[in-house]
Image (tube, rainbow, N blue to C red; front, side, top):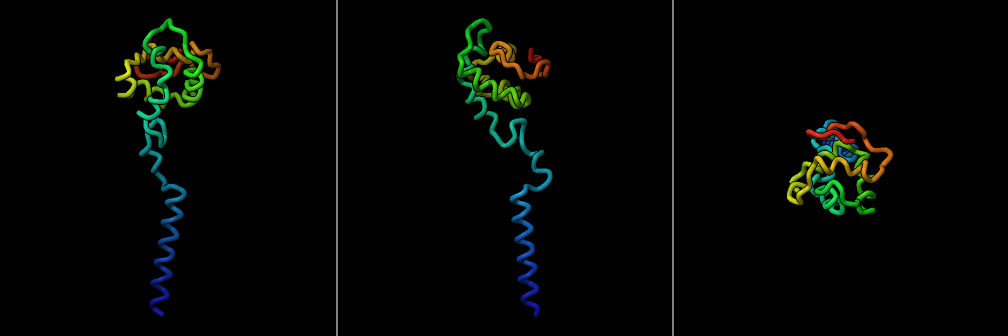
Length: 122
């Protein structure tokens, strides 16, 4: 009689741990950064088409850059983290110019007035 109780306890424990693992344990969201589960440096690499436009204020912006930027402005916290990432710094991105790209791309749903470090998104 004692053995089935042990197996039942082990089974209940395994099922509860599986459910917790599949649903995510409360509090795990706090371990993720501003881009969620995505690595900021990898997200910065996706903005590679925007590099030249993020260095020079008056250059035309490639269409591919605007397409990528349109996705990024949906999460302004992630966008700011990307603009201040080591990858962006190494590429020569100037955050004070990079924050103007959504406006220069004429993205209608950009986060106007969002504070990004020392700069505000226009």
